[in-house]
Length: 496
Ligand code: ACM
Image (cartoon, rainbow, N blue to C red; front, side):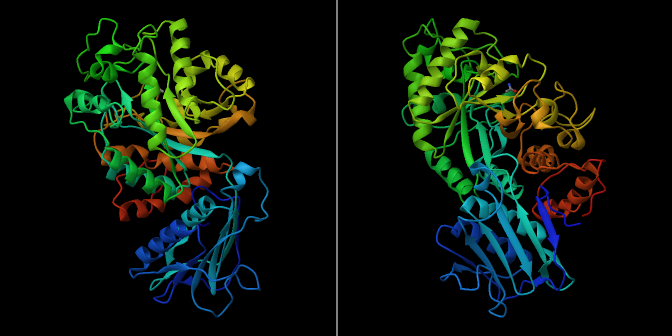
């Protein structure tokens, strides 16, 4: 069994000799596929210990898309808009095929994103025959189950520098996850410097929970992160959380407070005590500015406006304020994303409602979907990866229960909300909240191995826990090689 996670739709070992990576191996790719070619070349070269060049492909040969036998040890990337694999248009974007034999390796997809998914598979196929790095002879056809496969990272409670987020992006891409959602603002900090509102990061980013050091991303940091993600086929979805979770904003902008008096910075971990006010003249300009800046700084389709746990906002006021935030996002031309509480407000069709709290009444989410919303599945009891693995775990919380590896794997996104049309589910997103997590290693040890399980739930159309346990076991060696902290869940016989 090949150790592929997430498991592809179809894997056919074809027999014969493997492809051997040699000092003559090169990667060839057409215009538009340079970033995937760079990822493939780096993976091959990193494993083999010598430089594998990536170069532009010449015109396709008449025999088809496979490299002709005997032309040399090539890995060829192909952009093929007719790729004949079933699926709806959204899923076809990331569909790919991979064929490897002694003569060559061919990765084909309709889009550069699809080639990035193929590159992730290729990286997991690299193995050694004792002397050389080899790729086993195989034919793979693969199509994702869901188009949105993400991870939400809270950089507000504890700040993570760009280099840490880049390492997380690399991990996401390696498991075919395609969204990095960043929770950029909360009561404890404002983590993105916005050109129209420099006072937000200037006044409200110095610290974090327990007075730990804070930080904020400059515009240059943000561009670097977004570019790093784009070069791996990962979209960044930024979140500014309103109308609750806003103490950092209230601290930085006195006019957002009814008495004009800014509250102190907040270093605790309570939720639900802060709120915007719809009756203040500063509120709508604030929303317009911050979402306008966010859109200008971030390519992509989606902006996340938060909306969760606004316990200090009366229900009618909540609807007004979410309405104002929705209007500010729509004015940028982007699609709104919000945590499940936003289902209480009128939402434009196509809004993505992110389910997280399965303890709450989910009827409003079902109603929002009937009115045209899509639902992103982040049930806390399965994919909140800041939950402890088991009682007594040194890091994390337990309010949603313990989440062992099998809990992150064995759940069904389409059955999570009773009465929800399965066709309304746009995808699956894990989340990691950082009240208790301070460093890259602490975050990684909560992500791994569970993120691999969530990735398979999001990508693969079939689930088999016993098989997953075996396929994921050798990934520990890759995490060690890449210097990633991980938790040795007792549910797997890890191979290092
Ligand atoms: C959340 O966990 N408050 C979205």
